Image (cartoon, rainbow, N blue to C red; front, side):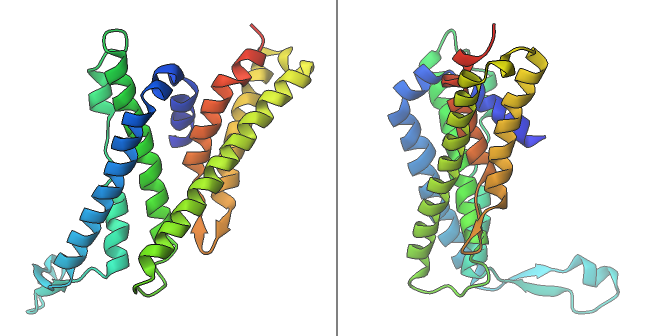
Length: 230
């Protein structure tokens, strides 16, 4: 159920206020998410390296006398955990902020949530593709490179399908005859962008379909919307 919800978030986004406050949104949604990722990753890795004893409930229930084991987080697994934990939920915040009364605050909170989700998903997918490798001095630079590659490709796929949808509706008038067909084709192009990204794997890293879908929805609402029938 996630892709339709993500598409709706992109398609119904109030774009003017979003882009007017892009600086604040990028600072909170991108910079702070990266900072949280580093803090969580380093902190988890440090704590995981000291072999914290934990109680083994399964062993105790099986009647074993050795009911303790040590928790150990390898660096890459700690970063994977950090990529998951640095994602924040803005549903509660958005639900109590009215766009009509506080448009700037609403746009900043909503935009931060969108950026935060995108960055978190990309970070998670990047680290996930590197779990089979060994952490060394070059690993942070490899993560940065793959992060940029994944972001550019995923955003690019969303832009391509968004513009392709707009061009199709503008040049093919038969698509605008039946509103049911029109709606289906619009949604179909978005889902194709999602599954295209999900099917592309480069250097053991899967592209982000959510990022492509959200980008496609934003482009469609800005360009395709004006090529649809009343």
